Length: 154
Image (tube, rainbow, N blue to C red; front, side):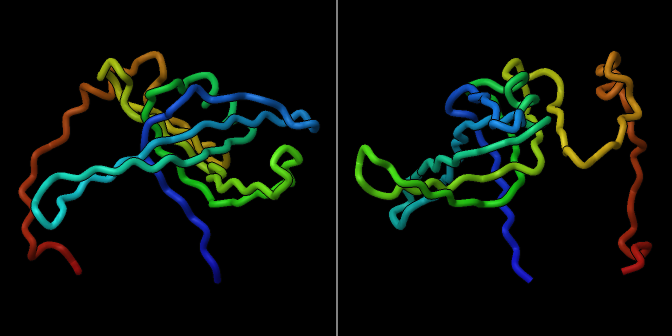
């Protein structure tokens, strides 16, 4: 069995670009920046940035075009794919590696209020909180319980 799974969380480097295939299916694409921070041998903080090409189809593409913009945070799950084509301008073959998204989850809003949303095309689960009452999510109180490790069955 083989696995082709990519999961990235980062910020859009540009607004999603929306287009349609000849079949009429919607396609959105954008670039996502992820960063990595570490300390080198001397203890100095280092940082590097990687850029990922993201492609979304159908309803995911429409949602991305509607709600995402440059700087938005988003979590993408999907598969890696490399395309190739002949480029007459350079006289050679061009390659592009991209992540074809299966699911997308919005990150926190720039204003810092509210939670992000998510969408999975195959999922038809409905939220128990009406969309007209997002403040209900923030007012839920969870009971405080002490958990005894001896009560855990494994």
